[in-house]
Length: 396
Image (cartoon, rainbow, N blue to C red; front, side, top):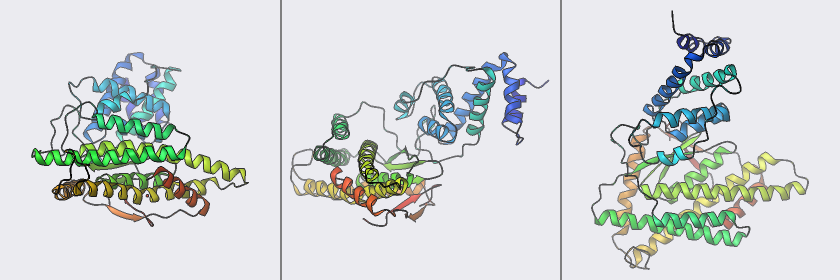
């Protein structure tokens, strides 16, 4: 006779009937001896996700978006259990695992409800498509993309993180402006120092990649903001709108900078938008959605040009001898070094995403929202028209 677990999976995961999930859950709920095998099968589904290019944060983010928080916690439990088997994990995985939600107790609130939730999660995991890998799966030897060794956060990044945290916390726009500007300057200088060091030591370091979630609502504006931050920090971003993330390609110090700055600017922008919207609503305005969309579009667009200008200014100063370099003097060989790194990033991005499409973005229709968003970007000291995105399914 076919094992209960296989009968349940055949009904709930491999058939299209409406009654299948309930049938499968009923079979599992009635047989406690299937519990261990049910969990083991889940670990196997998670392992398949790694082989398809997914990472822990990617899986939990998609499960939370497409199912619910309970399913996300179930996925987290499977991930934490599955990854214990590996002696070493790829870079960035440890911080992702540390950020996972706590797994719920099994068979709560009752066996049937728990089985329904688990089968819904497994059905989603089975349907995960293959995506561009940003590193090897755990247990595999690195190949293709460069993978830096795991290391403690550099002192410079710790300082930048502290500046951005203060910028997010202050209630004074002028102070936030000064703190964020200083953080971007430190990022640009840190990138230059790392590039010059790699050139002097003939480092074999190559570009890597990471994925950053781009969640609804207003995901287009958020993707534009991430694209602007990536470009200003010598990286390339490709947005997959269907799966809700952008893949950022660049050298490791620059990837770290992009993650830090994008997160902080999104927080600052959201706070500024909420305040501006409150003023609009106090005046009797009700078009919240169009105001927010236009605000965030203007905020992201304006920041793009300002970020690029800040990076260009620091780079010019470092090359001209203003003391921004690691030795305290300018380096006339800086521009060729940076050009070579830019080319390496572009080549890596094009190998990862050989077929991409560039989409012109529309949808900012609210003048008040646009005006307030532009002003907020100016206060953040970070900034053109008609933004374009490398968008979706690995297409530019």
